[in-house]
Image 1 (tube, rainbow, N blue to C red):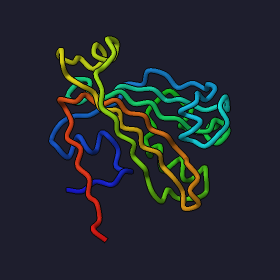
Image 2: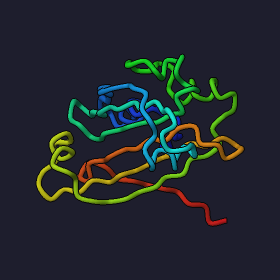
Image 3: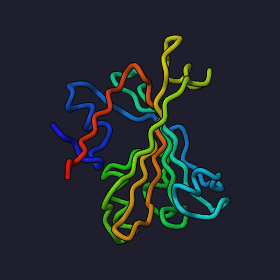
Length: 165
């Protein structure tokens, strides 16, 4: 079954007959560091909201996920609360922005984890991680969300469909 990028993590895991949940680590405003500023196309130091969490499958950590939003856009919404967003973050984001998300760009890199990352993801020695940064854009090419994920290399298969046109 092909899933939309808007399909939530828990739903994707449920499609596999497993139980997914997210443990929220923090939801805080902070100044945008260089790479976050690049992803969101804002000046470095601009206030962004960072939602940091651990994604679990059957209570085992599968990925770390940090999402970033321009703070002024989301500060008075459910996205700024340290709790799951029941209707989905992307649905709330589209409503706040007033325009739908039209496309995503993924940036993938592969590396060995830091000791802290290996501990958080309970990785065996020698297992790599995949950093997958997905930026969501509206039809005018404005970025709305940057989702920085760190995936356990031994627990994920990434499948992409690329048009031949």
